Amino acid sequence: MKKRNHAIRYTFSDRIFLAFNWIFLSSFLIIILYPLLYVISASFTAGTTVMSLSLIPERFSVAGYQAVFQEADIWTGYLNSLFYMAAGTAISLAVTILCAYPLSRPDFKGGGFIMILCMITMYFSGGMIPTFLVVRDLGLLDSRLAVLLPGAMSVYNMIVMRTYFRTQVPAEVLESSQLDGCGNIRYLFSILLPLSVPILAVIGLFYAVGHWNAYFDAMIYLRERSKYPLSLILREILILNESSLEDMDVGVLMEIEERRNIMKYAVIVVSSLPVMLLYPFVQKYFVKGIMIGAVKG
Amino acid sequence: MQTAVHSKKTVSKRGFLENVRRELRTNWGLYLLVAIPVAYLVIFKYVPMYGVQIAFRDYTPVRSITGSAWVGLKHFQRFFSNPNSWAIIRNTLSISLYSLLTFPLPIVLALLLNYMPSQRFKKTVQLVSYAPHFISTVVMVGMILQFLDTRSGLVNMLITALGGESVSFMSQPGYFYHIYVWSGIWQSIGYNSIIYIAALAGVSPELHEAAIVDGANILKRMWHIDLPCLLPTVSILLIMQCGSILSVGYEKIYLMQNNLNSSVSEIISTYVYKQGIAASTPQYSYATAIGLFVSIINVILLIIVNKVTGKLSGSSLW
Image (tube, rainbow over all chains, first blue to last red; front, top):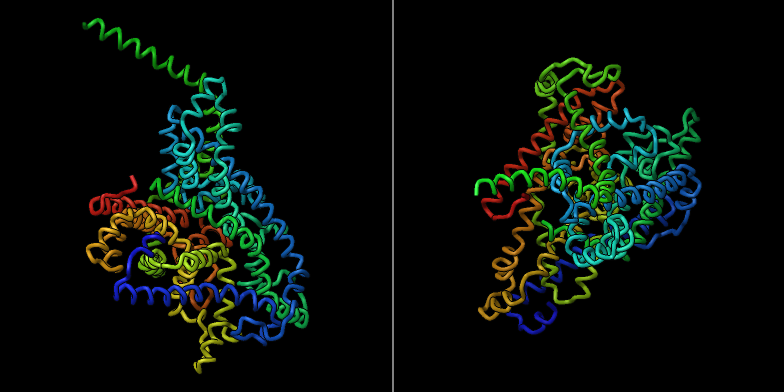
């Protein structure tokens, strides 16, 4: 691509196009970047009264972060979310592997039927209420498992992984290991999985980000605040403007209100930190995962 | 001859059972492994599908699913005879179609990036534009509310700095769809363009070289080479999007709802949640009926669109 562009001489109309392209993509970059940087800058500003459009805070302050550190709910939520992310990703990955591996074996009889079983759920579902009733009847309401289990496997991710097992791991590997007397289960753990680290990373990251950002299932199934993931606490702070404490005098409530206003931007930064720190490193894997998915079509 | 055929048949019949036994003996490990995901699918996907029958019953928690009385289409009739329902369906379709209309934007971005001579600048734009995708829905809506705040919001500060009057965006129903759709574009245009960028990288350079020799400029090459190459990807993604036209991003819309914009922001999924789970006396059957209606419409649309695009462009889901 690079070579081609250098090799050719641009015509007049192409130069106009490229000039437009530079202008357009630069403005696009600013539109995407400015709000992101603004959030970081605003999180270091002392209170909403001294806000400005500039990306450099007029009065630098860490009051927002101090307020975040004082809010116990945020830290319980943070720990809960880390747990849901870790456990959820482990469960999701395990179920996905256990489904993708047998289905990737051409010699697995009944694979076609199970594949259809999976595909149907991509296009038709019982819906929100029947799923809720199943979770309730299993006695999982207000349990941490209710956040982890109902959405454990994404059929789409499973198909991507199956495609990878089929196309990226040579069939000869299986044949020779079978000749050496390697069983099906041992083959999965000691040969196939070590050979498939890239796809495990991709799918694991898809799941991890999904679990970290999810809020709806937790909102439906959880009642007890001590089990809330961070996203539900954030919802109260950022969107509902609710206070968990009841029956307090106006003075205290106003104080809490002011503290919450100061910390809004700070809490956005703190809560996005795990994913955003990971992001530059895993960016190339995401691209790879999407491309494998696209190959399947 | 005939006896030979006959004996072959019996062998294959006996062979079938023998095959099953042998298959189980050699591949028992695979069946053991796959039992876990199958159990997951059955419990969390197929049991709810079985439970969908409460849409045609008067289900109450004290009775079991099969123990409650059949009422036929009562709940569907109730939904469609309620004038509010049509407003809800209209809202859902408006948001959905508005989002659908913006599908060319990631393609445009991918094409522009593809013709960016500076590789370093291209990489920078890509890196930055994927980032908003990883912001969670709750934080995204929180950012929208903060940015659109009448007093200290970024947007209103910009408007007042330019000499305008500050606008209360979230309390005026007229702005709701624009806020929803364009914040969604800001968040996902970069990420959605990845798949097109990958497809463009697969376009054979010889096609471009031949076109350049023939004197085609960039715009002509985009139109005659790149777009036809993107067509299969575009049609698959469009089919998928049409198949979920009645179940748009309810997680985000639910968070963006307030009392002042509810006339335009109530969509089917949020209504189902409010009727069936959040309400003090949940109406399970009624809410399930509405959800079932959505699923059926989605499946029908998916099949139709899949057929049509299969005829038009030769690419379809199955």
